[in-house]
Image 1 (tube, rainbow, N blue to C red):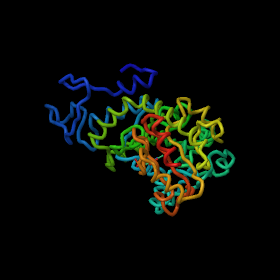
Image 2: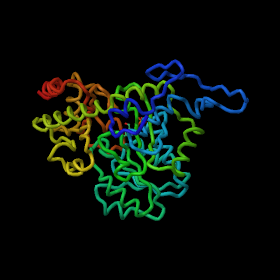
Image 3: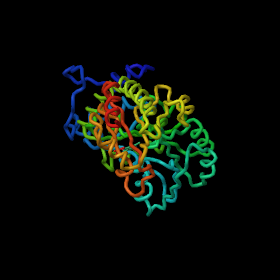
Image 4: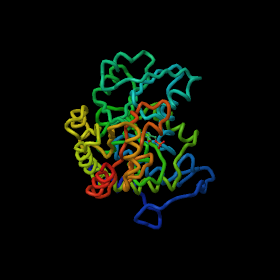
Length: 376
Ligand SMILES: Cc1ncc(COP(=O)(O)O)c(C=O)c1O
């Protein structure tokens, strides 16, 4: 497909391929192996073995690259498999900077899986650029950003972090799981974008996946590709097919998620039982100015609420909702609510009265009504 600046068009057409049947929608190729050509040596179909590559995975990676505006994308069986692949590329004795409230699974990989490599990890409030500058050492290889963060919706000024990192020749990654398309980290100078494609990109809570999109070719990309092919944590052909299908509606879904979340955040802010609403689209939110600067497509579909009275009141509210399912995860068409501290466990930094809300695509009046009855 020729290059197109419009997400809606790329989401449908990028990576599209046709097989000899001329099927309009790409077929699903489940075969794990591909036949050699007449010379007995080559692979004229371009594929060898399912772990190395598959037409559905290739189509998906092309589409994701177009949507992130990158050079190349490598996909994995989950978001954390993608995160681990990237952390795995850091040499022994490296220093990694994580946000102070990075997704707890990423923190667990960095802190628990690499002690034999003497990986040093610092957790820094990335809203404070002086603190970030002070944390950089000659061994710092990667600055991890996640914005908005999970679950406290802290925002990181991506352009400012990218500029600082570049001056120190340090790579940057942005976990863009919470705001796909709404913000474009590579255009802001970030080197790599990570997604848990399980969330908004999949959009229907029925597949697991992860991706790393690189802005440029280079040794980091080559190593990650090697880890994908030889480590083998690859997404199945069916999950690739399903995800590519879901991506066609991503631009529309993200706009609708963000519109619903904005209205729900404003409604919840006016409710006496709610202590605080964390949502970057609220003018009163401390991160609103950064959000206006870098979330040009909208402020996302995620918000968190602090419930007056503490954990017991929060759990009561979550259980009292009827449309919002009390379950972990996010980014699906259905609305979810979750008590974050109890799922993260002992090392959680989430307050006990915090509920994280993934605002789905139901009618906004029904979502408000559900909260109204549960708070009553
Ligand atoms: C921001 C963020 N990054 C990464 C992950 C991990 O993704 P997965 O569950 O697909 O491994 C999650 C999961 O909730 C997440 O919210």
